Image (cartoon, rainbow, N blue to C red):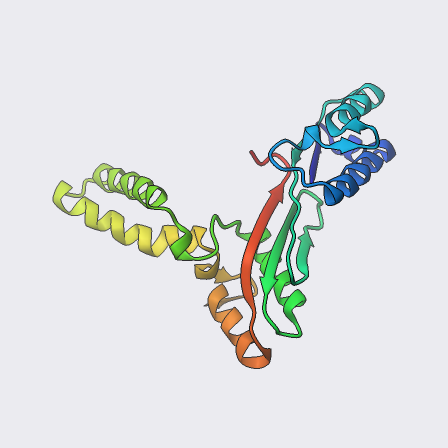
Length: 206
């Protein structure tokens, strides 16, 4: 869950911290879905508790994001040291180090937030939109129209996919390998390990 305030000072306020803990426990018990403000929390809605805190603290506060994961295997979590970014990763497999592997993938998601897990998860709409953007970029660079599309396709395959697809990204701890290669090494050493879900959370993220 992301609870946002206008200043860092308020984010360290005891009432703010208590509210964050109260809401987090409630969202763990009840899926926040698409409207976390509507979730019932100790006889009120989450939104009502936020409004009450605003009146007490005298600063705007909002629930920026909230998610609850359910998984057969443990969900790995990483919270960045500045408390403004975090990621949750759902793993599947029989590797005894599954949770630690998941934690490293969560760090990856905070360092380089992906959009999807694997290339096959990219929708045609996403690819078409990026190809159009890169085609226009090539045209703006003075490339002939008849080859701009090919240049765009190459850039999408080499740059866009590597940026937004988790398994195609360079691994944060060793850029000589991809995340997919890192996972393959873990499978070879100790058993199956597959990323089945992830969520990146950040203050100010819309």
